[in-house]
Length: 242
Ligand code: PGA
Image (cartoon, rainbow, N blue to C red; front, side, top):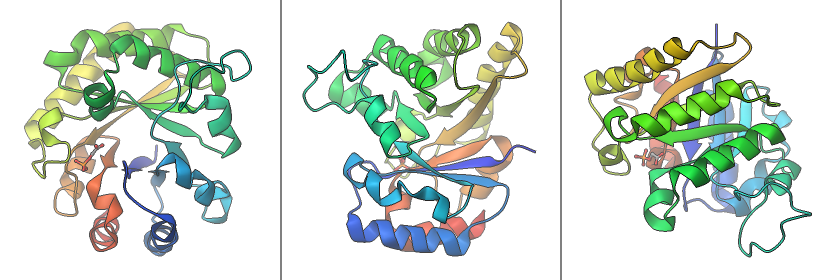
């Protein structure tokens, strides 16, 4: 059986001492059948780059990457982080298309699709955030089509269904709506037909906490946890429940 994914998005939170606390809590509460992927701010990636010392179900993710591929050819992007650079820190996953990036940095569907493509070619698994199917249907279809049609170094992607009203608000989407939106994505994948070597995990994100994570995990492949992953008490409660 495929391990459920528990992804932690620290956003702009966390500091060097929190990295240590986080690892301690995670290693105490680690459970089989889950993959844990932590996405700290870029400046803290180095604290996790020697990830094997935790165990083989723990992975390091970035919160963003540049939408240009090669460091050598494309240096004129002050402030951006290349995928080549991320790989030096053993980053295996990368968030793209988060609604906060769309809102604050005007990221478009095209930019997100470029990032996804570069990540796949570089051997990094993209975690692509999408909104409700009625808002993002065509974009979701483009993601899936371009993944299925491409020849890549990575055989799986993670799609995170994240309704905007649930992100950072404390108001989780209702289970019916989560199921419905995930079913719509799955129906489209089924319609296209998926090469058996390629896999798409579909997870949920938006105000996940200890009291709702159990029910949510029953209906999808994992969760993307923001705020709760930066509070040791709440994180411990959540890790205990799953
Ligand atoms: P939240 O964030 O858990 O704080 O709602 C989720 C996310 O932004 O991915």
